[in-house]
Image 1 (tube, protein in one colour):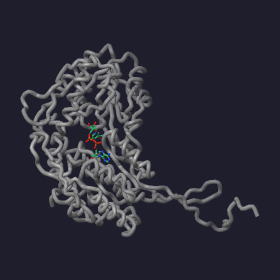
Image 2 (spheres, helix red, strand yellow):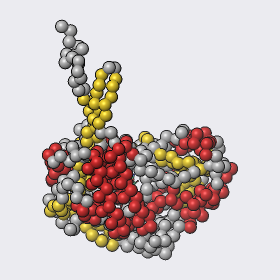
Image 3 (tube, rainbow, N blue to C red):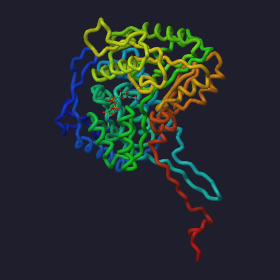
Image 4 (cartoon, rainbow, N blue to C red):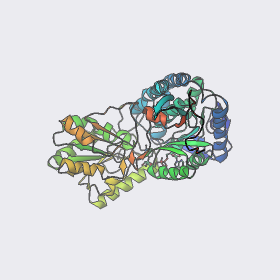
Length: 491
Ligand code: NAD
């Protein structure tokens, strides 16, 4: 199967595309074209959506016992597990994520997410009975319908699993629109869907760019949009979906803060600088790109951060020891370079990095970079750069650290590093973000994930993630002795 002639999976088959437009896929480490995909048009989207809709209304998928749907999710996890290394390598070739990270984030991490949703489907009370005010009611969670799932390039398989896993657990059918930068690997995902025996029409895929995504958002038979990507695109999607009262879950940008308290163990923090603050060269939405340092320890913190960023090997993302691969595209690197200029003009100092690595003459590489003398009001502290660029910001009191952390239009994630976990917990309660860690890097699939403010709308993962693909219905059954008359009837 080649995505150069098919716009994706429709009704269990790689249907020939209507669109004749293609998008070139480039390896960001070599700048060479490695493939091409169809830029699906409105008709391709319509074909896939109609198939998903027909499957939803006419095949019994939505009414299948949740335990049966859970079995399909487990089978999908198995099929993906068998292909995880292939998928990870294919993603790295397209988006430049270091292979050691891709092997995990597009491999076992994804498998665990589908297994989690299988458990969630088994455990979710899709129907419960409630007694209130002397009345009995049945509360039924019903799948919402056709879910349009729009995925970005930065960690495609896990961000897709957040959506596909929840939608299938709930009983929805789906149309996935992967990012054009990372679509070649979707043929492996499609193979896994077929191998898992998921009934045809439940999982459909249409490749393409923004217009393909926009056609999915605008399609009247799509009842829910799950989206991860930029805040700008998220706002557009929310407004278009709002015009049709379409449900949305949006996971958008971030400018998260790592707060180092005055009693923090800096040697422990040093180990987390890259995975927490600049994973995948900062192209991960939860990166803690603002590092808040107590003024008395400011120089010490800058030194630790600089040393940590310097320690990461920059180079070929397929090399297992690489920590910083290339940025995903020329456009992304240009954007990062523009921010470096902005930061300099604003009066911040580049302590390390700030340009293209001298020894790499091809690939969209950018040096790991640290800014000091950063004020939180600066553009480089307020806007999501999506590159390996960290800003160290001084503060004087714990209260000021909280104020700075919250002084952001975003509210996705954050962390607190302290010798006193209780003090850390108390501050964590005051930070307006969807998830915050105290002295830890852990996360779990059973916990809601998403953002406050411009970081998104709604939550993925956990039972909350499944619930977002359902509608609630209250059924009042007739009980013995009930009157069929309305209490409003006067005669
Ligand atoms: P984007 O938001 O434009 O694209 C993400 C996905 O949405 C892609 O599949 C894209 O085709 C689709 N899309 C874009 N506009 C759409 C629209 N109007 N309607 C429907 N679908 C649409 O992101 P990008 O252009 O790849 O990256 C730009 C910036 O976005 C980055 O620099 C970064 O700041 C941010 N970003 C954030 C995340 C995240 O995880 N939160 C992921 C990717 C990019």
